[in-house]
Length: 181
Image (cartoon, rainbow, N blue to C red):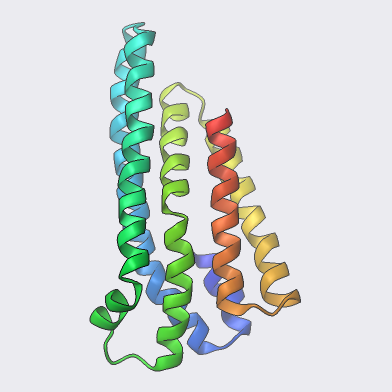
C-alpha cells in the first residue's frame, strides 16, 4: 500500500488521496487475515509439537479454507457495495478522489482471498520453523508489485487502476507460490 501510494503520486494528489483512503481499510482487513492465520498456525503448531501430523495437517487445511472463505465473503461485500461503502464513509470527498478510491478499492478487494491464503501459508511456515520461505515470498511479492507499478503507472499510464492491478497480480502470484510450497 505504501509503495502504491508513493508510486501513484506522479498521477496527482487526487490519486494519492484515493489510494490512501483505501489503504486505511485494506490495512485493517489484512491485519484481520493475519490474526486469523496466526491463530490457526498456533493450533497446527501445537499438533506438530505433539508429533501429531494428521491433526496438524487437518488444522492447516481448516485454516486455509476458513481464511479463504472469510476473505471471499468480505471481497464479495466490498465488490457489491463498493460505491455505497465509500459514499457512506467519505460522503463529502471530492469526486475525483472518490473515483480513485472506488477504482483502487474494487481491484484490491479482489486480492483479499489471495492475501488471506498467503498469510495463512506464511503463518504455517513460520509455525514449522521456516520463516525464510514466508520472508522470501513477501520480498518477491513486493518486488513484483514495484515492477508492475512501474509498467502500469509509468509506461501504460494507467494511474490508480495500474497500481491496483499490480497489487492484485502480485498477491495472486504470492498466494499461488505459497500454496504450491
